[in-house]
Length: 364
Ligand code: SF4
Image 1 (cartoon, protein in one colour):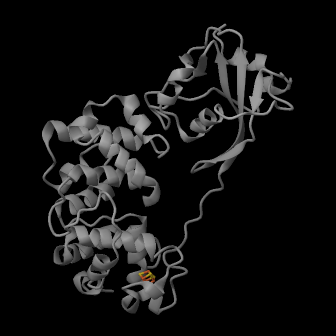
Image 2: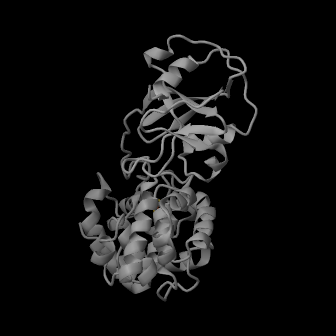
Image 3: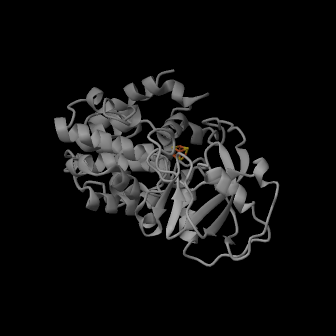
């Protein structure tokens, strides 16, 4: 089935966006000219992956103060970069951003979509978003929101991602006709504020021409993908402190937690935790919480264990002066225990055997 040409079907989006667009710190005032600071667009697009605008805004402002140009970011230390990203999650994005900034600082901005896609961390979506918003190239950016909007508008059955190539070809003339930056951001804004999983069609500028709305299919287009049930686990998270130092895992070079410092942790299933020994005065505990990851739910029990003297730590652990703790980049779970250290705890009724923990963390 042929689709109505995109410049015609999407025409109401442009004036709607000009009227309702939010004033965001990375948005240019003039949507018809190339963006005055492509780096700001790149930073915002990487921060906005998997993260809400309200969360990103203060991070973006601080980031641009600390690393105002690609050059500044390229020359910054890894710890400073991870620290500035601390709390945003998906830390690979920070490393990609630094690597991309290094390329741009050394070689200048790419001059086409292939060049942008070649920058570290820029997949087809981010490259197209930066191309259209920063440089006014007619490069349609398709994220989950855009796929949802287009699937409903064009009444697409099945997974709309299967239509990616066709969607891009169809969208290009609309970007060229109404402005690449304006149309890319309009589509994003519609998906983020109105064409939600439960859409608010009454306020949608496209409602009179939307296939799913006109046929009462907004509930089943696009089909909702079933997610596997997250795996559950339980662990004890320890702040071991002695002689003004705390014991931490230094950052790994690779993997999900690369660049981040971590507290030692013991899985509840460890045999060494069978013997539960109260240690009044030496152990503080706080109520636990559930840390939710994409594929996992972790019941976390935070503890603070004070020792008289440091021991030789096992490989992969290091004593760090407690005064330096605030400056180290930590993941969300570990930040939470760091924050708790500043608040009174309770002596736990039962805690895993401190000696077992020391054995687990000790080189001897
Ligand atoms: S009319 Fe409803 S379903 Fe269609 S694009 Fe607008 S919000 Fe989405």
